[in-house]
Image 1: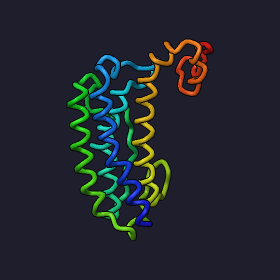
Image 2: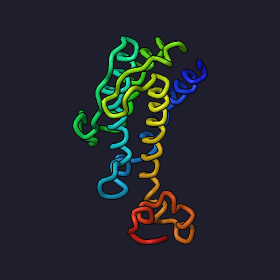
Image 3: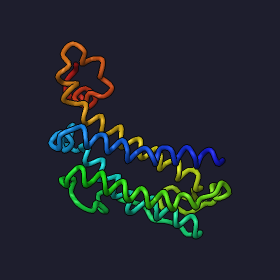
Length: 178
């Protein structure tokens, strides 16, 4: 079971590094470009990770460690600020918040993984599943951000565009075919 904690930590430690590379590598306007209407830009994904890091995962860990239940997180209601902030500052804020969260996670022991808490939407859940969800959440929104960043390159790839159909927003949303 200690492997679960170590694997989750590996993901959680690496995510801020991935975001630092992204904000250092892409211009702000590309980071702010949503791939399609009603989809998040890369910075929208980063803002969501910041909001979740501020309001969700550390609170859930604290709840488990203190034997309490926890509320549902609504990203639309809990967004702290718009994703128009400076990308470098956002990445730094995320890294700082994640560092604080990892300090809490370091208190989790293998025997804590079976602790349960009540989630209003999903019922009784064990800490192990919440940790797995946290890692998956990080990876999901990092992939979502990279997918947003891919769009101009996919659109400009000419005859190779069909190779990217799984990530081409226009194809996946039925706005044409490659």
